[in-house]
Image (cartoon, rainbow, N blue to C red; front, side, top):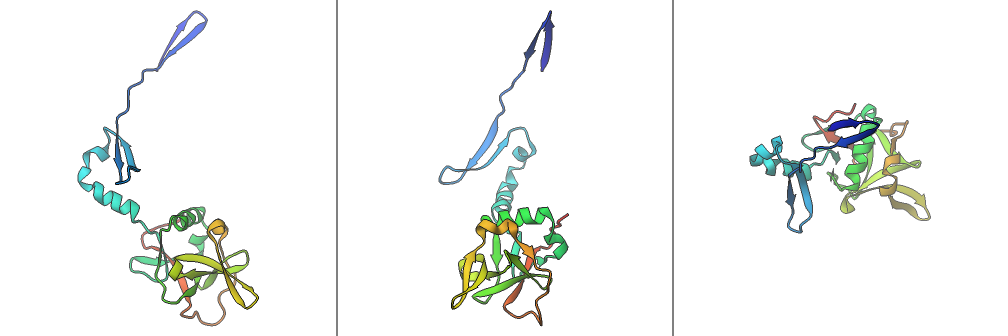
Length: 178
């Protein structure tokens, strides 16, 4: 940027150069990746497929035990980074459901996850998380998609031993929440 002063007037001359970029589209024409030229990405085209595969097949959480995942701690759960990533992952369907039973209670260190004083269950068949509201004749499933950012870990542990209907919330082993 050049600034030229002439008497009481200031004229600013901006030197602009066109920025060339690479745009990668899927079969429908939707842009899936866009980056400027003269960057490192331009020089590593041989690993683009690996990068895109990782980017689009990234599942940071698992409901239930899974190889390469570890149990989430209560301390990690209470970080803003966790809530943001979990909410985004859930809304985008980027959570693995590794449960056997039709619906299982989701826990962190033996404490049930809750929303609005209702425990959260995994409904594996539908690949959804929901809260179970006791009403006339049993439990009514309500999706938590609109309230996912209000999720919390209950202060009290599940009484007795954790059953097969209780599964831990897991996170990729090398992920750190700070």
